[in-house]
Length: 405
Image 1 (cartoon, one colour):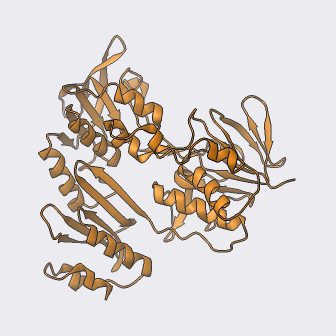
Image 2: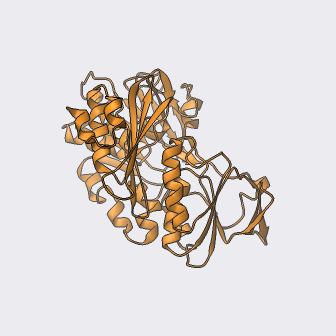
């Protein structure tokens, strides 16, 4: 059997894998199966510059359409997969056709969690934002003066709030946890981000859940909240996390746990099958995690490409993330899982700061708010594995770059 590579998923990880293989000189046939009707594109700008009308969709495309044919990549759009036959090494599509594979890669990403229909999740004008169709539908409703309810105080919800305020909508954001960003950032980072949004006029209500959405003729018009209040809403954006797209892998008998479990080489329990990006569960410092970021999707996919052409290096994640809200750039290096100490530093200019995370005395991550120096320094420290002088870090008069000495 020819070593045809089949990639299920035409997002960041799927494209990065195909592009890296071609840049390494690999000429094996590649079949990329995408569920959307459009060629692979960048997703992060969808909920920011694209939604604001500051970036056209053409600018989001990774490559023009001809790139795929010129590079022997059989890109099939609107092509969902029904099942994987591991014994026959074949992918079966819903139209009944099959595609043989020598190696198979899941790059299926994740799907936003939706509100249950029992509390109004199926009403009109209730949105999640994951793909172009979501962004296009939401864009048509984001008009000045309208009332937006955001359910969820994570990065998705906060970025949506920033865009909505720029467009002139009235925004209420509810978070059922004690504070926004409770799962992903320290209290100090959350405090800074909250203050920025409140200064922009966002009504943030923490420790407040959604009881139900209220509809009129199938259209959302209001929401009943757990604090006993009711707020009017012309539209709702839901940002309550994602579910990894791992059903195909589970049906094929591969290990899953809200994601497809892989080893240090991004391989599943089947040596011919890999997974990369948001759908992959990997080991990070002894714990199984999914790293939901563009950086991880690209790096993990490129690590698979290197293995397929004969490489022997395991994939060692070096996570970094970012979030743009108003004129604020939050940059994150590392992964703060299990942190037990934070050190906060003021930046060199107004409105800039950084939060440094430690786990058992070891530096694991930094959040930098409009503070590029702290971000770059922290990222370099994480890459080198150098010990961090916490006394120097606590000295607000010391230059953070001294940590690199």
